Amino acid sequence: MSGASRLGDPGGVSRTLRGARLQLRVIQALLLREMQTRFGRNQLGFLWLFLEPLLLAGAIATIRWAFAPTNPYPGIPIFVFALVGYLPYFTFRAIVSRAPGTLQANMTLLYHQQIKLLDVVLARHALEFAAIITIMALIVFGVAVWADLLPNSIPILLVGLVLLFLFAHGLGLCAAAAAAASEIAERLIHPLVYLSLPLSGALIPLHSLDPSIRAVLLWNPQAHIHEMVREGFFGHLLPSYFDIGYVVFWVGIVNLLGLAALRAVRPRLEF
Image (cartoon, rainbow, N blue to C red; front, side, top):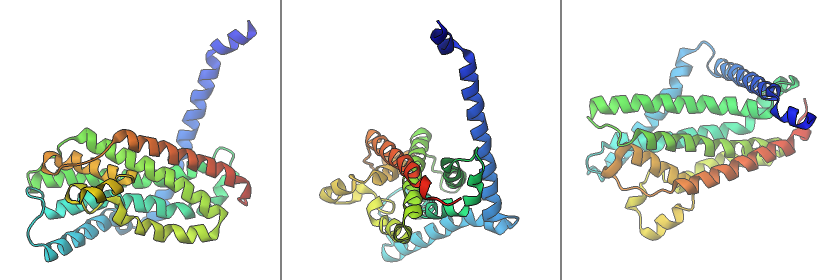
């Protein structure tokens, strides 16, 4: 009887909700601290978060135009194509590359019982995701006004971006744990992220590749995500290849591995 009463006791649910609200407040505070740490009162630093991918996409579009003056994607401005392709990769790179320094940079915060390792990593990653959502919204508005080109499917575009964040977040957890366990791992993560660009499908649509090469790249979940983003933006203007179930599977795998790695490395951290 007492066991049944405990199971039906709404007090347990309320305690769980209070705990969840507390952790959300902790993550919010960490997010505000991360923004203050990275940008402070320097408005140029905040604007650079948006200007950097725009400038890099412009450089990529200029190089493409210089070597191939004829637009290979009819109906799609080459600058917009480069921006839509590179921006998700830029966010992926930012999340995974900055993850190794996350724990060391916030070590003193871990003295507080309410702050968990996951909270610290999630706050930094959430800042990058907020940036990509804001920039993509600006791109959608700008392209609609400038090129009279509306996204084909906002839901597919958003799902692609959310999956991108979750996939990068899981890899970021693994990278943070690896860096805490080994200095060599921390040094290897940055070049490996840059080397992943040719295999990511970020700058070249899979439709333009030989089927055998396309089949190889589709083993990489990241290629599916970039194809989803392009499908959401360009639709029938550019055929795409992706499997949402395959991406969700790998998102679950890398996040479970990341959580397990953080749990395993925690005893090695010096507070």
